[in-house]
Image (cartoon, rainbow, N blue to C red; front, side, top):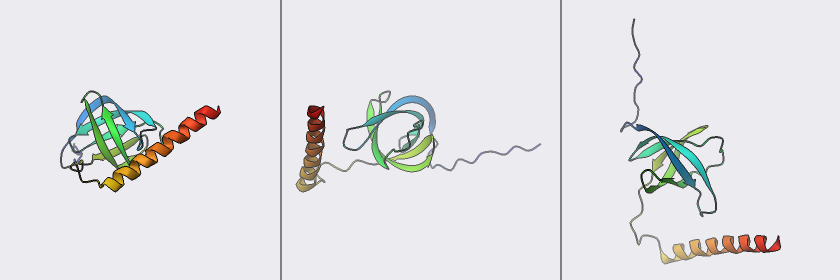
Amino acid sequence: MSTTAVTERRAIPRSRTFWKGTVLFPGGLRSTECTVRNFTHRGARLDCGGVGDLPDHFQLKIPQKGETFDCSVTWRRPPDIGVAFVAEKPSGTDSLSDKLKALELQNRKLMRRLNERDSD
């Protein structure tokens, strides 16, 4: 009787976890809960339930680790997704113009929400 071993394709094996996580959508206007099923310093597998509209890039907050990670989706097999943690850009690499554009966009979104709330 022979046994077939499952080959690990990852460069770094992930630790099994059952942590609560929060997916923070870009712009900070929306979030959704998930379960972190496995984890390494390079990425994770997330169980996001039936949420099918997750963006390709988002932040993942893991309270048990006390950290928030910038993520890029590497694969999707609902209800799970695989993410790679994106290294942060060194501070000062964003141009002042880019920062101003991002703040103006955020300001417009907030003003729109306030106007919608006031019209109700």
